[in-house]
Length: 283
Image 1 (cartoon, rainbow, N blue to C red):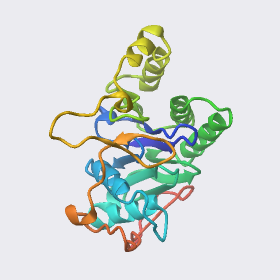
Image 2 (cartoon, rainbow, N blue to C red):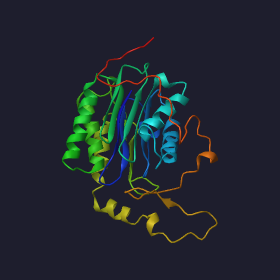
Image 3 (cartoon, rainbow, N blue to C red):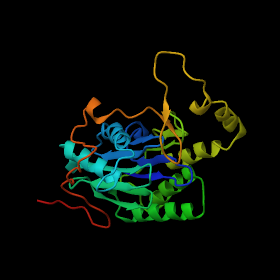
Image 4 (cartoon, rainbow, N blue to C red):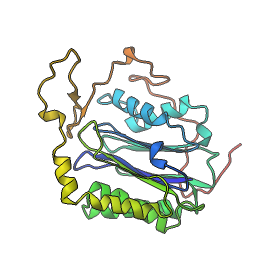
C-alpha cells in the first residue's frame, strides 16, 4: 500500500524519509529519523515500533565495529525480534549512508526494494518494479545535480507516482527530514487528499518564502544555548563529521536490547528480497 525512500545526505548529514500511499495519514506511522543517527521506514503490515527501536539500536551501535554494516546489523536484529516479519517491509539508512532493506515473503501485491549508495527505495501493492526503478533513477539524478536534500526526496516520490505508484490509487504523503537538532527540519504531511503529492509539493515550495525562512531562523539551536542550570544532564553532540545534538546512548548493560548485541554479530534474518523479483511466496 506504500512506496517510500529513506536517505542520507553526504554533504550535510541530513537523514530523511519520503513516503506516499493509498491509505490515511501515512506520515503518522511510517517515517522515522533522528539527527546524526539515521532514518527508518516501516510499512506493509506496519509495525510502528520498528521505527524508534531501529533508531535506538543505530544510536547504540554508533561508533562500534561490526562484521557487517551497522544498518544491516540493526535490520537483522529487528527482523529476528519481530514474529510478523514475513508481512513487514522495512528499510533504513545509518548516519554513514549505509542502507539495508527487508521485504517479507507475504507483503501484498507486487513488493520489493532496492538499496543504493546512501539511500533505499521500497514499496508494496505497486504496479510492478517500475516505480522503484524510477525513484532510484530520479534520486540519483537529483544528487548528481546537487539539488537540496528535501528536493531529491520529493522528486523520488514524484517519479514513483509517474511510473505507476500504488496500484490502488493515492491518498496521503509525507516528507520527514532531520538535520542537526532534536526537532525536524521538515515534517510535512498530507493526510487525506485526492492528489497528495501535489499538495506536498506546494508545502515544500513554501519553505523558500521569507516568512517561513525568517521564522526558522528564530528557532533555538542547542549549540548556542547556555549550559543548563538544572539538575538534569546536558545534551551532547553526536561524535561524527556532521555534528547533531542528541542524548547520549545508554551503555548496553543499562537497557534491554532484545536480540541486539553491540559486540556480537546478529544472525541474518531468514529471508531477504529485492526487485525486480515479482510477488512471491516461499514454502
